[in-house]
Amino acid sequence: MYYKTICNNQNTTSANSFLGSLILVSSILILFIPHLALAEKCCRCVDPQVSGGFFCIKDNLDCSALKTSSNTELYNSTCYEIPAAELATCRKIPDGICLNNPVTALAFNRASFTTQATVEPNQPAADAQSSDAYTPLDFKLNIDIPGLSLSAPFKQGDKIIVPMLAQYISAVHKLLIGISLIAAALMIVWGGFLYILSGTGAKVREGKQIIIDAVVGLIIVMGSYIILINISPRAAQLQNLEIAFIERKSFEFVSAAQYTAALAASGIPASPDGANLPLPDEVLSYARTQAQAKNIDPCIIYAIIMSESRGRIIIGHDENQYFGPGSSLVQSRLNFMRSRKFFSGKPFDNDVPIMPGENQCAGANHIVCQKAAAYPMDYTQNADRQMKNDDQLNVSAPPDYGLDWRFSHGIGAGQATIFPNSPRCPDGNRGFIAGGNCFTIPQLITKEGSVAAIFSHPAVKPGASPHAVFCGYGGRSESNCDAIKNLVKHKEDFYNSCPWK
Image 1 (cartoon, rainbow, N blue to C red):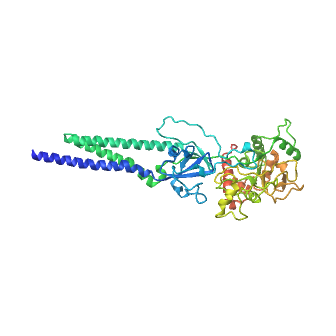
Image 2 (spheres, helix red, strand yellow):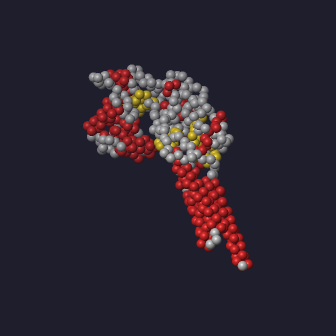
Image 3 (tube, rainbow, N blue to C red):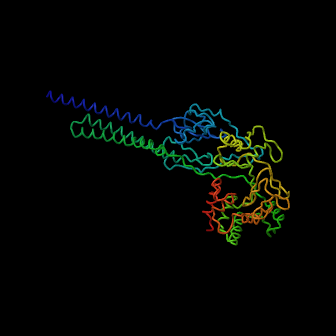
């Protein structure tokens, strides 16, 4: 009897020791492991009352949960997490990408930022809408997750950021982990109950096995996350969906009256019905017919027209063009900002940034030049809301036709580029010379003249490859085409999608 009592006491002591160890290990796993995922994050945010770019929050909160934090300053903000590979950029401009030195959600103060949007000085108030304006589609989840607040899509740079899919899947993942933790804890408690209070060896073994299985399951659940996050943070944390944003570019559209005047100046008969300004489909159809007659691949002409104007009759003012941080700075834009005055002679306002001088936009000055070229919008945007020159086409005003010839211009459906130092036509008027022909500006803004100017280009000839034509149209040979590879690819994309093949 005494021996049996000792054995029972030893069994109880062993059980308590074993159970205590398992509970200790489980507690560590339950309480500590989830916090491994709570490392400090850098959240990039936009807010309707903060202009000029995005600000940054460094916190261990999820970026989607910042607006639900105790700081009401973030209530209207939309934030998404910067990928781990870009954390080094979580600093104030110019070294990083933030308007501010990153702070925690509780320390954020919106009053430290400029809150009044700038309107372009020569732009009508009715057209002063932000380049970031767009209307996202409404969405509604079929299955809501308690406590989940999804961020609406927003525009950042040249992309639309759609965070809700990643946020939803991440929330489902965390919910399942939470359920697994609760289930494991309940199973450990149940296994411990059987282990301690059972009177038979079978029940003791069953309780022990339940505890072991629960701990192993817990380790697998949490271990898989740790393994993934160590292999690649992107494997464990979904990234926001990014969709390329198609920007509106700045052109001066030729009016019906201007087109009628251009036809008269070019000696081209007007349409009997008086509807002289052609639609894009009419321009493209005419170009296709001309290409077939000249034995030239119609899809090459299609690609040129679509990439340059989408078939519209337009004037491109090169001094108005800033294409974003990933593109080369347009020389005419740099020259315009250096000039400090509009075509009318009106000087720039004093708050317009000073553009560095010639050949001074490399190295550390590159961002300075970008900021000046983009004024008054954020230089990180790829938009077309920068300050504009005030020249306008006047078909009845030769030889310069009302355009500011300090800078280059693209004319017509093919955007034939005329530079300030381009030779004039024999009659002394501004024009585009190609293949021994000189096209005046009125000719270039007719359907017939626009298409004829494309065919007069030396690169556009029967049997030429699309790549050779596109390089030549950009003023480069195939062996020296790398500098304009993005423009060439743009045309090649249209060529590959040509409906005339």
